[in-house]
Length: 178
Image (tube, rainbow, N blue to C red; front, top):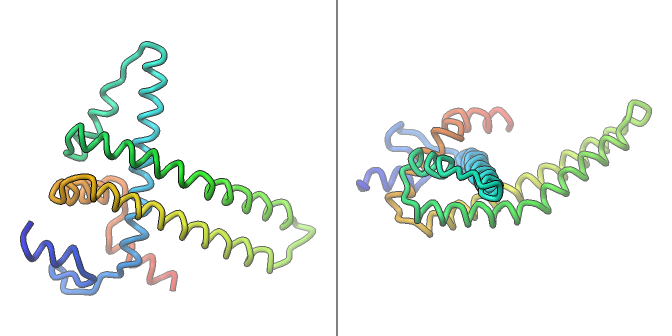
């Protein structure tokens, strides 16, 4: 990796575009992109395991991810393990999200429109989303530490391109939300 590429990817300032990058927006976009990648890896693993149980091999699912991301099978095994661990840690938060939405729907009916209920539910959901994002980013970093840095940068580019939104779109969405 060149020094310029290392500096531009490491800090909040984009030399290529000569502008500051909103790190929070990048992290939010990365959390969404890696959540999608981890879900896809876990779904493909479940399909492969089910196929194996039914004597139908599906190696093309694994091979598709390996080719698309440009990683080795050893790196894929690390990705698969980390994606599974991430999913396990996210399950209780997903349960809390479902419960919060269910409670809101139950109590916030046409007959009982207390605006404070909406504020409380929104605040709780925002907190849960922030927890989920932090977990996903932590597992992204674990994946980064499990593979070669040059390979990770290639994967990062592919994940952002295939599963994420562009950084400029993330910055626009974040600035509009403020």
